[in-house]
Image: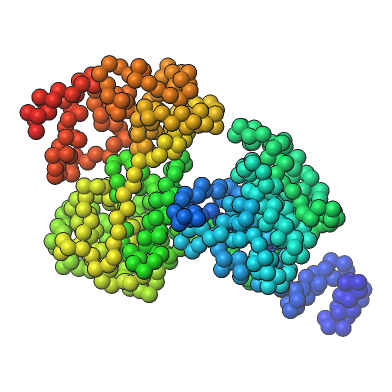
Length: 596
């Protein structure tokens, strides 16, 4: 029919004789018409899967106590779904689930919803704007909320433990097809949830019905080698998934949501990251989520919001690693304007832009040829500082400053810069990472003109120490078995042997452990006794005895000691020099006393 129309057009509009309008000519004219016609240049709508995810840092008990919430591997879920569906030209849009964003979603008429979070029979954990948890009650309020959005949802997947009750609420709100998880004593494994979701959506995109895609995804979980490698029973994990309502015909194929390109955001949160300069936290970073939440709470919640937070703690405690993880958490959630990590180590700033100004300022701070007393009068400092303040005018910004590698003179200049920053900008939030012995204070020595708080990191608890040790010890072949066995005993001697909760020492102890020591640890099922210690070694000094750099010494390769830092107290003198007066684990008290 198209060629008949083109044939007519060629004679009437283009005055081409009928006998000369070959098939090739007609095709060329058709292409021209489609390119110039109003309907021909309309971009095609794109299919999407909207994924709402929530991984709050903490939750509040009924007694009002703040407790840590374990994290969910949201990035692995996003990557798996994106990789699976891109072959079908279906884009995955991941968003963080807050009450505001869920309300916006319900009002936009979407038919598909994938929801990943922590679950409970009575509620789901969604996020507040600043890392806390909000309990989304599984009750009539949730049903009314869904109906208020227009009852457009046709399919919902609630990927959360004990989400059967939440699934039934969606069914009561007239959602035709709901995948959720049964309530039982077994928690849903994050790995099982990802394997199931990837298989289910892949089959659905290939044209399978909901029932067939569900059945095949169950078999994907049952045959998963990832679950077996993690020490989990695939059959138990597969039995957790259920399709509601029971007895309904689910042999229907549902198309994914479609959205016009002009309204379409970037398909992945990874492409939305505002700053490529935010450093990546260590792969085995463990158990600082409560610290992260307390930092965010001090800066963004309540009446006395701190504009400056000083993150400190003993050497090797994980200050920089915690700050990196917090920066990633904030950056992915667009939490408080643009985010900067300073000093910039991999920047590619162009002359005059904000990155270039940051780089030039820290070149000045770290150059000892420029004394701190002359900083405020230096034209080069004033030019770059004023240009920076102008760029950030009326904009929110979060600034992380790592001073652990800076000299005391450079830190003094950073403090002088912060004086200027706080006098110029109201919307900047600054987190300074510094050693305990380095003081962060205003130029006048009294204090900055803003509310500031200090957060001091404490040693890891016993389970977190064992977890970190197990991830770094080459002799651990079955991590889950090792972790459960050692944590069950909760032996103080084992805790001290593993570094006493100081992450750098725990990693060193794990790397230094030989086969004989590991065999003793396993034979005693994670419980050491004083009989295992050499004669004369104090139990609290187990780590130092087995992981010393010199005979009887305490200083490890992971310690962050700086020879330039002045000794300001007797305690610091003891810390630095007493190890040099040790021999075979015994302290020569007379020598120490004489030295002091």
